[in-house]
Length: 162
Image (cartoon, rainbow, N blue to C red; front, side, top):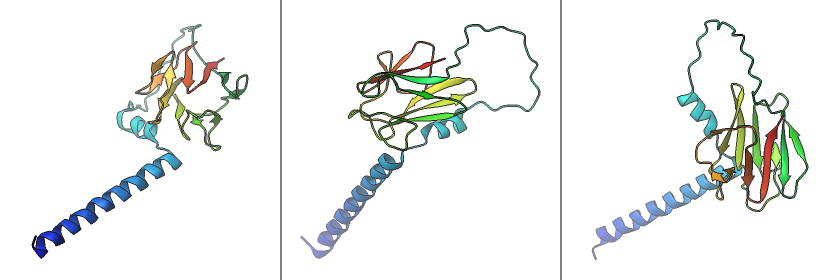
């Protein structure tokens, strides 16, 4: 094999090695600090609001779902609850920095989040390994929460309550 070919093989090997190292660092960073997928998604595909005043309609929506807390049903934190109050976003995971800390070996550090969009709560899985489930169905895209829907992360289940 000529010296030029050997040199090119070495350069190619070093380039592949650096690509691997940089992708590994990217994965570690995403796991430590999480990703802001919902914010990007809302900016890209969210409706554009007009500044025009909206007339108020006198409609009584007695079945409106306006949760005030997240209630833990099963798992190590069963019985605990988190008051939503004025929160616009609730992060869920094992990380001590999460709003709702789950002590579950199947949960990621930043596993999922609940985001208040308008007057509805939307659940989004943050690319977790084991997934987030609503009523037994895996969440692959942001899902609007409904009354009575049970969220499961690993062996922990919880729901939104008024």
